[in-house]
Length: 229
Image 1 (cartoon, rainbow, N blue to C red):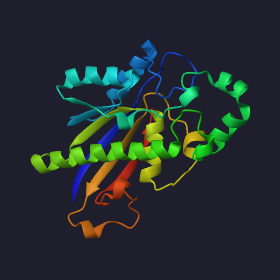
Image 2: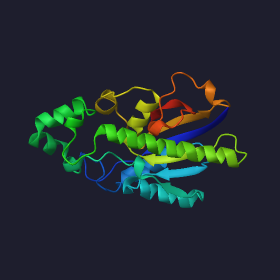
Image 3: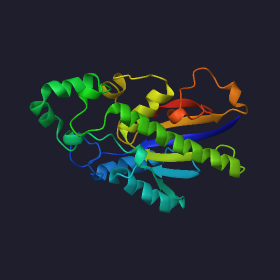
Image 4: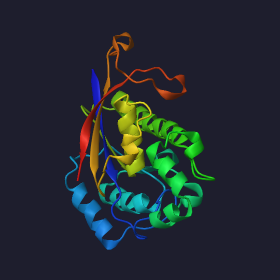
């Protein structure tokens, strides 16, 4: 059985305060940069591949890492945060005061398409996009395994809390679990690791393996290591 590891690093504290920080492109604060630098010291080395969301709160740090480690950076729009539409960039208090019933409905069940903010991305579409991004990373690691004699290659993905929640739900086969978004705290600069396994024979897949998007053959299995700050 072949094995690889994906380490997900959430961005640090951002400018703007308590806002619906989806695809609005805001930079890290000085503290946010320190948080990510501190967190990176806990990431095992070496790193074979480096991926990032295109949003500046992830991309700027990943770009500096790419130069530091001499590892090419691959930018994946599929692993950027959800688009909150007209809510994007607004303070949570402002959103609630303007649309209290819709705000409550969204956080009680963000999976309901009708609860999606105007001009926003539904969580259903968001989760599918993130799964596609995950499989892009998985496929890239598989190529490394096929091309090089590296026992356990490791990829680092600099991304967002919402993306990490979607990946957790997918790997744990949790379905449309509202609690992943409403009740789970993922701190700034949190680290989450995912072990990826390719069995020698595709017919020997474990029954719990979640279905892969786009009808792709389910030829991998995962072990999730809980996020830590």
